[in-house]
Amino acid sequence: MRLVAIALIGSLLVGCVPTVAPAAVDHTMPEPLVATELPDEPEDIAPEERWTFAVDGVEVAPGDVRDGILFSDAMAMRAAQLRIGYDELRALYTIDLRTWGRERSIYERMLQLADEEVTELRRRAERTWWELNGDEVGLVLGLVLGAIVGIAALVQ
Image 1 (cartoon, rainbow, N blue to C red):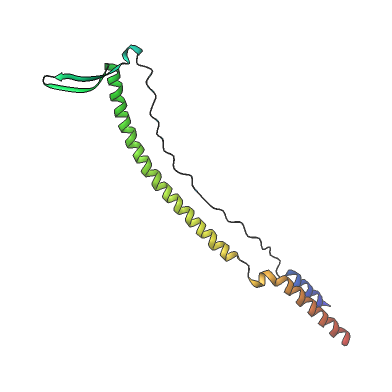
Image 2 (image 1 turned 30 degrees about the vertical axis):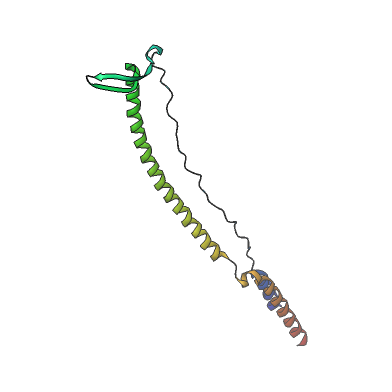
């Protein structure tokens, strides 16, 4: 009887592991953002100082005749400040783009390594034939052993 009880308990304990694997997740990154807006026109310059004219054939120095745009002093000062600020902003923006590109490549490499590790862990977690069918084999084996032991006990 003890042998039958041990055989039945052993057959129930064999292969009691769930076989559900997690679903694969695709990691994607959004496209990089690029800002293209320039600042609005300054409101701190008085309206009477906000003038510009296109000029043709103006002598700026003796013998130096040029075409171009004539600014008021306040607008010329603002244009110079904007040009200096724009050059500085453009340089910082270029540095930021290079940094973002490096960070993006590092992040994409880390995602790739993580995906490879997940794939390897999934491969290792795949169930063997015994893990998939061990409970049925154990049950059948237990029933056969139980029947044999029961018949052997009756025969004696």
